[in-house]
Image (cartoon, rainbow, N blue to C red):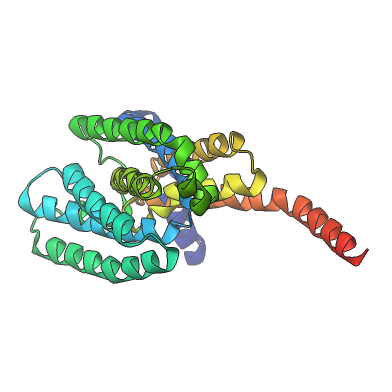
Length: 297
């Protein structure tokens, strides 16, 4: 056999090998249920992440979530609880100290490497399985046991319920913060509440895709949806659909290989975004042509 062909075949088998697929699928039933819950929550939250320009904050929260999870792993406590604790601390700090985008970004830039450094320190001190260490960074396909599944579904449900409860004032404040404040909307409180919801969403998303790739759940699906529609109803629905397809589809694909779960999820998420961008391109060009014609006349 040609050595190059053998290497290529071995590489392909590592990525996709469905020979024992039927037996393996029962191992990820909890992960699929968790992915469904996270997709619904992440897609819904992601719309406001995009419209409120919080993508950088998501990354900052994920680093402190990683630090909390790593500390819990070191101490033998619940990784989910540690992750949620770190996320909430970061989210509340960002919400209280960073009311303006410039202030918030500088605070995130200061706290993000601190959280990442703490997480790396805790993992270096941890003497358990190496898979547990890397799972916090890049996700694990069979990482969700019964108690963790309950936590993930509960937190996802709380995040969705909380977001629906503040949907109208949050939408108003996102569209025009000054007018919303003048109309009596408690803008600061709404902002902090949303950051808490975002913290919860980030913490549970880290359990599936890892701290380094959490943007694939909380940013990319919403960015894809907003490429093809600006409808306040259709955009969240599409965002949730894209997020669910990314997580569940990526998990099913990862089951056939020996690679971590996160590359599959992020690839599916990116391909959806790319497809939406290509679909939206003709409409964007037509709009630019109309604007140019209007300005010329």
